Image (cartoon, rainbow, N blue to C red; front, side, top):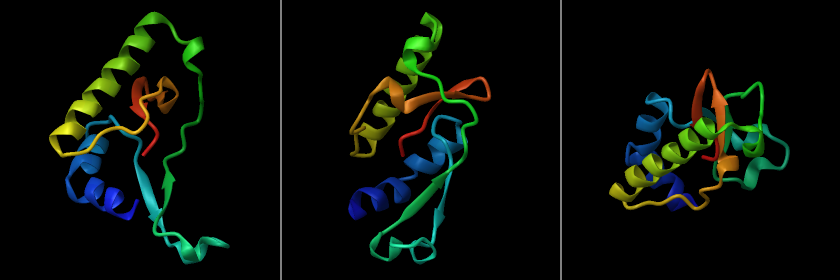
Length: 104
């Protein structure tokens, strides 16, 4: 997991995806500041998504937008030697009117 995280951050994939609005941003929190977190490599606190919806609630165009986002992220990841471990529609939410991947 350490190597995966470090590759994601050093490859530019994460910051570029956040800048493009495709991935929800997060801040890294000092593991020692969380009870029991001392053994963690990294702790990430994502930006709060104020309303969580489920894919079965979405209209066709939202499902399509979520699928296109997932495919675009997968293609970008493959170019960096990575891939999505989970391409579930549940990893996408609509934030500020756009689909955003929430499973860093």
